[in-house]
Length: 181
Image (cartoon, rainbow, N blue to C red; front, side):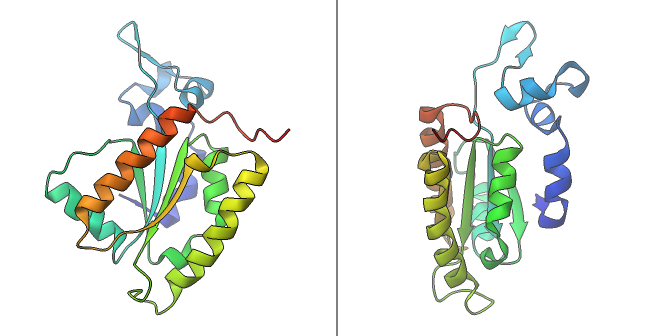
């Protein structure tokens, strides 16, 4: 689990991907981390997308916890950033994640009407719908970004969302930056 306050520190660390993949950081360059071109034991490693998920503490994070404690199978590609409310997630967080080499981003919050902070998820819905259009305008494939509602009782749904996002990002390949042209 990564708290939102340590998010920027985590993104600044060029070796974060290497540690995540189980490779020693002294052997890996920043370019290898971003492109996913890391070899272990002399064999090229198959590319796996690096995903980051901003999850609401009250519902989505609890849904992720339920998926884990229920031992549901889903890809281990997602790094979780726990935020107090999905309304706290600024579009800059998502852009910074792409800037730092993540291949896909998940934003998940409480279902409309269930927000512990009254209307945070309504703000998020409005903000993320506009932001998705901005990403497309910038040339970032829409498959790389997903916004969804996951409640604390929906461990199965959380596992499905992560699986679907991972498969969608695998189809479009590694993130190579903004390709507006």
